[in-house]
Image: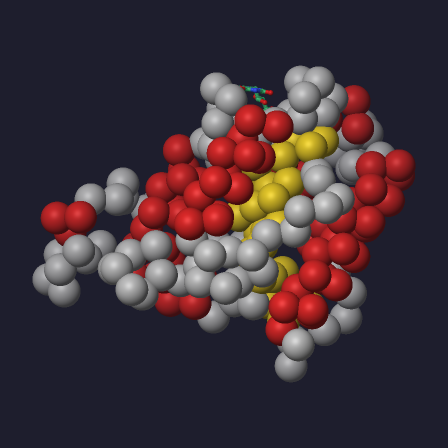
Length: 184
Ligand SMILES: Cc1cc2nc3c(=O)[nH]c(=O)nc-3n(C[C@H](O)[C@H](O)[C@H](O)COP(=O)(O)O)c2cc1C
């Protein structure tokens, strides 16, 4: 059966570098895998007061149902102020509730950060991992994926350059291998 891998992009920007990286990963998926992009920017901010059958926002329910169906979760995100962009953190929070019904539990995870800066979003990468530990998303540890100087790794047509594509392939292969071992 085809495995569905979701790509969560921590940037809402139309020309986002992280979006280009996520699309590049998606293009490298082998047969037997399908990429899915789940909408996060319409999710109302998490508020426990809304967690009742009459009040739960339709967007939260849609998001939870969609993520529940998926086999693996890949986060491709910029770093905002040395941490995780709010849109992504909010999505993690929405998916984690109601208590005992988290959509994240045991889904194999991959964290990739890309930045025009030299340290490749290291702070966001590790802040995100802190939440993933608690959410019980087993996450690939090695190789790590901090993509620095991303502005220089995209050509004039907006494609990721060859050397970086082969790095993405290495990361993806390790992730799919890791996921398979978890499911054995
Ligand atoms: C609010 C804000 C905070 C930022 N903080 C950081 C940061 O801590 N580290 C970093 O490397 N870049 C930071 N940047 C720059 C982003 O890495 C850059 O805008 C990048 O292109 C965003 O990713 P995107 O191209 O996928 O939208 C920040 C940008 C914004 C808008």
